[in-house]
Image (cartoon, rainbow, N blue to C red; front, side, top):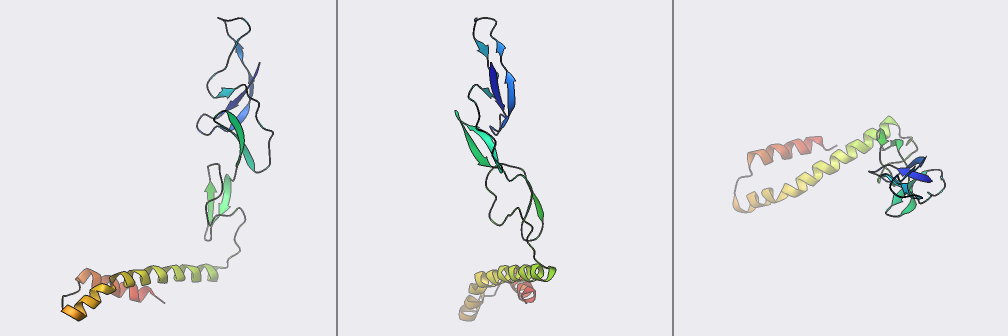
Length: 146
């Protein structure tokens, strides 16, 4: 009897094998762990055939090389690509990447300044000193913003 084998952790179909006869019951066969008698779906480009419970399903297979804005990444699991990841290299120039990086830096530091503005307001209204570490970090944030 033909059985269909799958990876225990993911349910991904890996091939067929022949079940051994059950030595205790004539006409019965032994189906080992990570195998089923249910035939899998036929292969489909870009998808893995995965056993989900008692049925086979197509799951996107994007494993391998992929790209985010800055670098090549390796996708190791089944499923849809994460936001910002693509299978096609993004044709950004070094100048565009640098500009995007600076924009991210500006946004991060501006958010810090915004979140600590209350210290400045409190100082102006009540003369309570701004903590030295906040003053130092705010100065660094202003210097980082272009």
